Every structure is written in structure tokens, then in C-alpha cells.
Length: 187
Image (cartoon, rainbow, N blue to C red; front, side, top):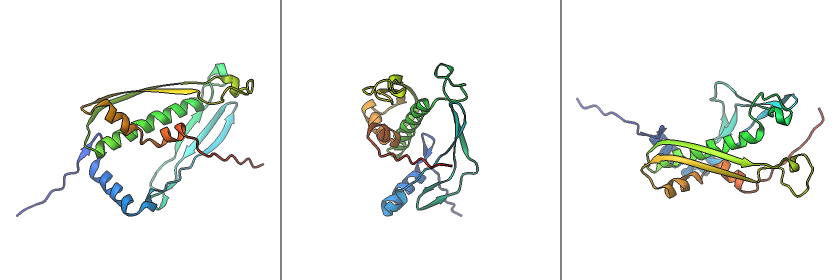
């Protein structure tokens, strides 16, 4: 009697066979590549507000596989008149960038057979609140610059790893202008 056993290849914590199947499915049907993510935010008090994310559209349908919502509280530190109930919004931008650079590098490395043994990032961003406070029309309201240092333990050259991180959608969103529409409705 002969038995066949399928061994799922896992690299960097990623199921490579599933990743390849996903890539092939998107190649065959590019409409599967379109995603729409959502967040609902509610003001709590002062600078404290809370965002909830759960459902999204992707792979050609509404996704309802998440069993629970993810909740993220934001606030300001006391020096910016907050109560420190959560990271402030610009710190969440750093988190989003770090998380996306990391995920992009890990997934793309796995797809290319590159092993990553460890990865840690440090991010710093500079903001001059003269712009935020409306005290200067020439000072930008957002980050004036962000510096990312990624320390990666891998047998791949640093240049190759850096190229993989460039697939990050958050990196692209921050690095390139993206249209944002704000529509304010009276409740």
C-alpha cells in the first residue's frame, strides 16, 4: 500500500504553498486583487478616540471570516493635553509603516525562498507642531521626515531585502500623494 503525504512548506511563518496559490489566483483573475478596508472611529473625550475594524471587501467578496473586531484607542500624551489613553495618531502611522514594511518583507522573502531568522525595526518621525497649531503657513502639519532602520538576520544581501520592503502599501501611501476626501455631515 502506498500513501501520499502532502507537506506544506512553511518559510518565515508563511504557508508558501498557500501564498503561491493566492498569487496564481490573482494572476488568473485580477479582480481578486481589489480590496476595500474600513474603520469606524468614535470620539470618546478630549483627544481620546477609538477605532474599530472588522469587515472588509477583498478577493471578490465581502469578507466575514473575522470572529472579532480589532479596537485601537488613540489619545495624546499629557504634554499635548491628552490623558495618554493610547498611542497618538502619528505614532499609529509609524506602527502602520513598521508593520507593513515587516509583513511585505517577510511575505516577499518567503515567496522567493529567502529565510528571515529575525527582523526588528526602529522608526523616528519629525513633526513641527507650528503647522498643526496653525501658527505657520509654511510648516507642514504632518511628518517632515521619517527614518526607518530595519535590522534583519538573513542570508540574503541587505539590498535584496530592502527591495522586498518596497512592496509595502503603507510605504507607498506615505511616500506618494494619495487622494483623501473628507466629507463632514451634521448629525
